Length: 209
Length: 209
DNA sequence: TAAAAAATGTTGCAATTGCAACATACAACT
DNA sequence: AGTTGTATGTTGCAATTGCAACATTTTTTA
Image (cartoon, rainbow over all chains, first blue to last red):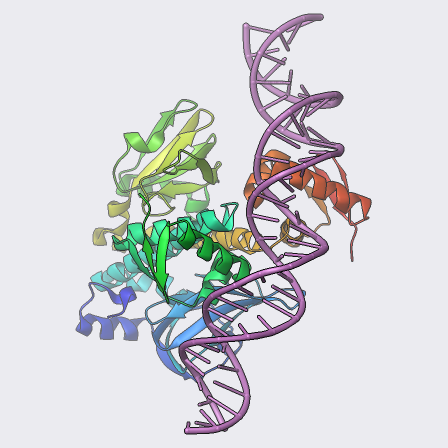
């Protein structure tokens, strides 16, 4: 179920796709999507996995966002305004392409599913903002320990559990927290030794409070 | 000129405000806005200045966002989903309140200015995302020096000038970069001594490259 | 399944940073 | 104008961190 089409029946989805003159494109692994598509579009990942990557003047690459099934991206949605950004597929990926200008056009007004669509779109962008704020909240902590604990707390609150299954590798976690991987590894060791957490592989159990 | 009403004539703005059943509220300095308004709303700062502040379990307060004239906030727009957040006025502030549910209602469809309004709303949320990404880009730099230079570069590129007028105090800049103020002050001194920048008060001139 | 690549764990060490404790400058208030 | 409060500049020092260089394990790929 595509979040952008939440509360829109399959029949109406078909109408909507036609109304918005969407297209579906398939990209092979390791393809740069947004050099192909220069237009003002919104992309929805239907299948596969891609990343928004920024390359700065020094050639350093940063992962701005990870795009899984259901996620959306686009020049007018997520951080692609700066020209150093690219969307690159990391697996074979199927993408729904929607022309942004079509979305805004007034002729669509009469369709109720169109309104639901806009509502969904707003909701998704709002969620993206929330996620960014979460990361900022973590990044502003001054020590690696505090960053880890903030990450754990947010996860724990969101999932309502004190057992954390890391959704990615420790290497990626270090990137996300913007700290050195080995230093993070050391800090995790200390947290274990001091009895704050327990861990086995990517499962981490919170023991404090 | 309110950005949310961009490309909407004054006459149509009036109609829109009526259609959306908006209200305008005045808040004294140092008032908590969002305890008064629990509903799902969007607020537009018409005059004044406010901050979105998060207080965590330790009682630490972080400025999540600064709200000036033209900026928008709301449970469904900016990071207020987590209940630790408050909007607090720092001056006497005039706020336009819009019921979020009204925005979404289908009965509005027939009005062309309504579409422009939605378009503006999407554009603003998109800009918020861009700003968040900028800050994340800065925060992921590992040294104070790199954070400063990234901040300078973004500013410089945005304003098309190599002379920077800090929009806030050095204390606030340190907060924004999430570093110790005195350590930042020291780093600025080094940057000056090494001839990368020049500065007088809050005016900083970039000398490199 | 063997080889190559990526992820993880560990540690010493030097560089960077936060913190504390100041002095001084600037601003706001009465 | 004088007092109070906040912003800024400075510096020593201890804590934290990044970096480099490994060993080991796990995963991917040919």
